[in-house]
Image (cartoon, rainbow, N blue to C red):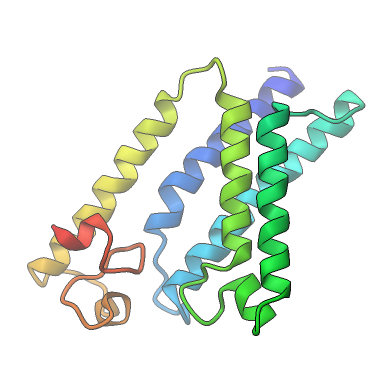
Length: 180
């Protein structure tokens, strides 16, 4: 396998890991399941960015995506940074530390994913990504069903459910698994 094919395959594997691991990672010792998920998301997106930078250096120049998408992505990232900086609590707005980790870092990581998926799967089948979404969702709903019938091996459901009987592995009772 050539270097570029290996990097491309590795990128696709990381996309699938983002889709499957982030909603399903649970760690008993974690201070916050939401913060754990954000950390995993940002680390995996960081790997994607590192692979993109490696590829750019290897070919001797920047690899660009479609200009409109790039400009919109850059504009949204700048808006996230400015709104975080002007917030009464800049660090909390940037990291999302006071809530579920949904700060500018998380939104920025999602924008990087959007841009990357558009670039990497344009003209290619997205079937592996759709299959990963299906597998991840089955696991998330399976955990919710275990909670409904009080068979869950996890004892932190109350922490994740905000007082409800079922907490999604996404750390929020508003997700579909909690409605099952």
